[in-house]
Length: 326
Ligand code: SAM
Ligand code: SF4
View (cartoon, protein in one colour):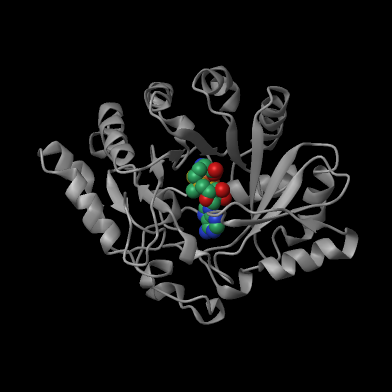
């Protein structure tokens, strides 16, 4: 088992399949031109499988594929099928644009729950945030997943002045649609123009919902990063993820593998462990994984505190979100 010095058991691995993407969300990609990682530097399908198996031997029982956009990778189907054979709960975070091509495969692979990112219910705002005209495709694909009985979580990054006015539109959507909306506080990453005054906190989100709806808390699972709620009578639910104003590091069970095979013990960790180079040179990867977990900081990668109003994003050393894998 992978237990760190704060007694946290790590059984959840998030694997980025690529840092490439067919959307251009400004909060995820750096402002300057971003060069996608070259094919040869990416973990290959057999290397992903091999590293995943090592993590499973060390106690991992949940794997999430992410990116960039995991479904733009040419061999995504092969990777999904390989990982589906492992004794883990396999899931995926996607921008939803390619789900229609993958829905049969996801069913075959036993994936039952997916996170789809959608920050707005308005086509024009979608175009503004992502710089691509794919709103209807994403909406259609969410409906397709619902029709096929997948559990659909919708990730909404809430940003002041951009989409905070749509919070109750999302709640209204949950009335007759079985979607589980997750409002996420805007986080700082390299090059994403983050400033604290753009953060719309979970308390502010709940205040907005309160103006129109009464709601009840849901029972949270042990490692849930989201605090869940339901409006009585609604088919779907909503939750808030308070990484910036109330981080949940004390129960963290997550590890990350970037598309170029570097292990990160925290989303905000500066130091990375190069597992891919070790694997390619025949080194003992297990030892490196253990070392990386032993070095995990108590909270937020040891780079800042929950006093987010005073963070200077320039002083945080990290990759862009698209290069980490969200
Ligand atoms: N392309 C896929 C997608 O968009 O779902 C997977 C990768 S994306 C990096 C994973 C998640 O990170 C998305 O839900 C996205 O909204 C979220 N994300 C990206 N940048 C963020 C930021 N600065 N703050 C909060 N969430 C962010
Ligand atoms: Fe692509 Fe997802 Fe990042 Fe948007 S959030 S640019 S869809 S990886």
